[in-house]
Length: 81
Image (cartoon, rainbow, N blue to C red; front, side, top):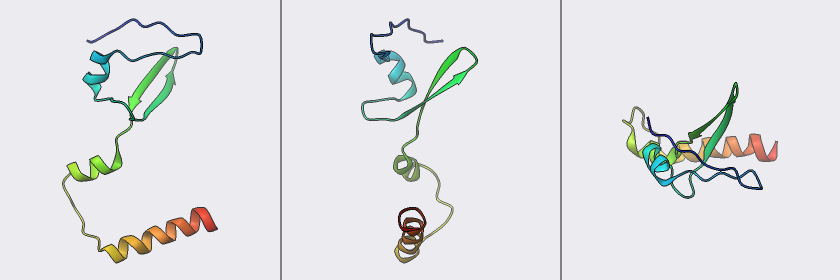
């Protein structure tokens, strides 16, 4: 198990040591989720949806027109509705 002791700064900031961030694939610009479980803080890497889409096995085909129509419907629901 990889473990490190870090200090919390004046503004409650912590730095993730390089060995730990590399071990879980976190790099500059990535997003993480912080979650409280009892008295623990869990930091979990958020998967980049575009990287994920390029990496996984494809199971469906969508035309550009279908994608565009769906995108417009979602935008209408969230931004114009």
